[in-house]
Length: 216
Image 1 (cartoon, rainbow, N blue to C red):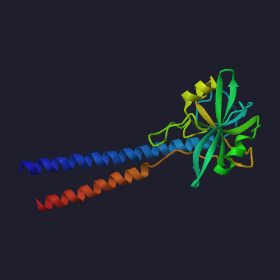
Image 2 (cartoon, one colour; image 1 turned 45 degrees about the vertical axis):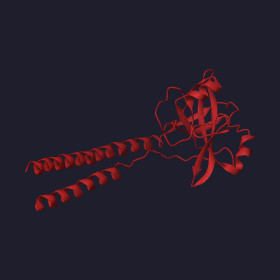
Image 3 (spheres, rainbow, N blue to C red; image 1 turned 90 degrees about the vertical axis):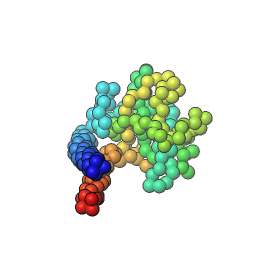
């Protein structure tokens, strides 16, 4: 008798937890949808001149600066094809650099881009957080020309300047071999799938619990 009561309590607590997790994911889904909607609205607004006080992602900006004549190449897949993101540092002032993502280039075009002067003094694009290295991203090899992630601390040392905390995603076309970026909000939103999973697990558990009680 005691064992049955204990198991009943376990099932009830488990079902409550799973339903709570599903409800939490629905709540998170609503928040994420509102966030994405607000950011998409930002991309519909007019451009503003870039300044270091801008701290919000997906702000449309115009940057009028000369580049530092250096380039950073990040491994990046585009529709399953291996290539590189072309990142160029621009000097905001004597102590600050802003990184500009100019777009994607195919692997067989990389040497051409390396030797091409990307001489555009007016950048049109939007701000975005610099993506941090995750557990599945290989470490950068400082001896190689190509990187897997933007290491802000290493760039600070190599460029001897501070790095503006947001990346500028350039949308204006600059070179025929560089595929330009598009205006799009890239924020993962899998909360609906998570909610369905938790609620599905709750339903299966309830059915199993009722069957178990019927047999008991």
